[in-house]
Every structure is written in C-alpha cells, then in structure tokens.
Length: 138
Image (cartoon, rainbow, N blue to C red; front, side, top):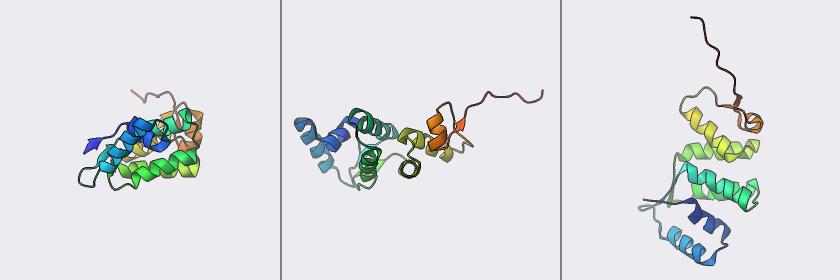
C-alpha cells in the first residue's frame, strides 16, 4: 500500500497542470486491490478545503469527488465507514466536511458530545456549544 497526498488527488480532480495530472493519473491507474493507495482523514479534509476554497467548487462537486474515492476498489480510506457517515451528514445538513468528520470520529470513540465555539458547526454538524466546566461538590 502507498499513501496518497492531497496534491496527487487534486491533480486528478482538477486536471489543471498537464504534467502533474499525467503523473497523478498514471499513479492512480497503477494501483491494484492487492497494492492499493491509502487516503487518510487529513487528506480527505484537505481535498474538501482545496476544492471548495481554492478552486471554488460547490459542496456537491466536492462531495461527488470524495464519494468516488470511497467507492474506488484500489483506494483504502482511513476509517471508511466514519468518512461515509461524515459525507452523509454533509449531504443532509450542508455541514462542513471537517466538522462532520470530527463528529463522526468523536462519536465512534464514545464521546457524548463535541463542544465548539463555531455556530455553524453547532447548527449544521450537531456539535454542542462549549461551556465552562463546573466543578462538582468537594
């Protein structure tokens, strides 16, 4: 297995640099189920941010690309089921993918809530407003 960085996958998604796009496409075509590529949570979040912020792609376009990655037999996604849950949450609530993934990972790790100061994450990703910890008696 070989790890794939964000820039390799962005070249495939955008195809804006002919030489780099050819290298990236060749790399992806060389992957097999026996020797797959690995994509981490960090790379998935970076792809979302690069597509939606640097390339002004819509959330639906970014969702489509990330979903295709999760469906590719020659790519292993870190905690694939959590990523799929986060993508589903984005589709349903229009949350930021990073926020949705934070919630999915925290939930899978037995967190009762994810606290934040981000009003958008509270509204769309289901996070909880952060509050000062109150000390109990004694």
